[in-house]
Image 1 (cartoon, rainbow, N blue to C red):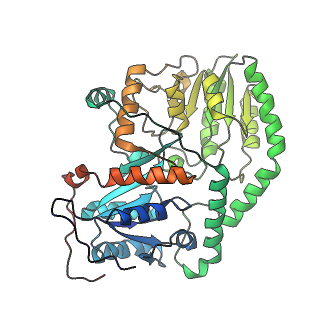
Image 2: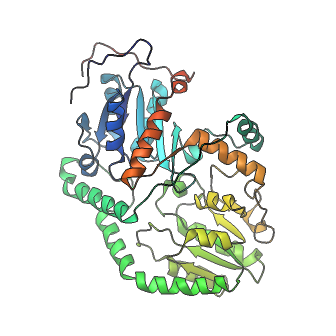
Image 3: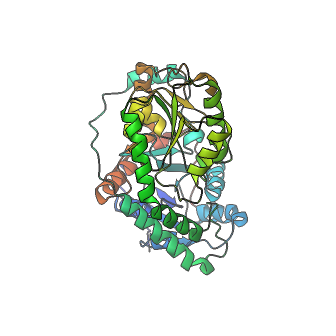
Length: 429
């Protein structure tokens, strides 16, 4: 699709040149690319597999069929050839994205990183160069108090609809296109540890057990409603980079073992532990069996309860405290004044907000977050790292694209002192 030449008013900032890498499974990057072009910017998109190709119908696509080893060279060539000023990606820990982020830093190209929101629902994370443990946000509570005092009152925030079914169907479509077109992308290697067919089998297995799991979860809720004191441990996805790269764990199993071992040794004898499965878990691991085995080893099987299905907000609200690796359930708990212990490198794991000692001391003396510090942190987080909108409804996508473009093309983005933008050469597109 021809994108040049472009003209612009002398009083306006020149159009930017965006390169989109991988997005969330679904149409978000296509919607964002369309909106950027309507705003007068140039946009290209790299497709690494058939799923990427399926959800990009705008032209300006670059089909990358090489492997990870060759990606750095080709990424540099793409940036130079098209005079790219901005690279956009979803998740900064995918192997190809990690290479691109490091290269862009060396070349002076801005990187806009999307991720699902630190605070949910209706918020999406958008930061420059890195998110989560790679975020540039400080860990000093005093800084947040100072910065929050400078900010104007926040505008009213309105919720947007979201469909789990839509998310599931978009994921199925993406993975199906990936499988069908594998011969066309010989160098593609999925960053997830499981083949899409394996994940499909896992989802079928999980769906077949849904009725049984629902009944079991309702029994646990009955105990909670009767006033059973409990701590909550929400599981995260086993292959999540948050676990494998932003914590000391290689997966959820060692995290489960550490939590139950500490709970058995240090929690009050009247306290219970509720472990909640992630709603998007693919079902390839039987977490219930793993949890029961570990609980038996430590003689607390009667006090440790697994929930495969359940309202996470209700679970958080009734908990004495929340133990997590670095899940966004932590921010949900903090918002309700519930004590939180984060075992991984979470963006919210800050003094006066979360428990700072060893996990062993959390069970008997869980400190509540300081309301003033949490309010300041949340205010600054929204201002600097979050935008409003959602991925899984038309209304949410429209709002998200408006918010994203406003953030990515703001005048202050042009003034980052560490960025030296590449100058156009005589190369043709």
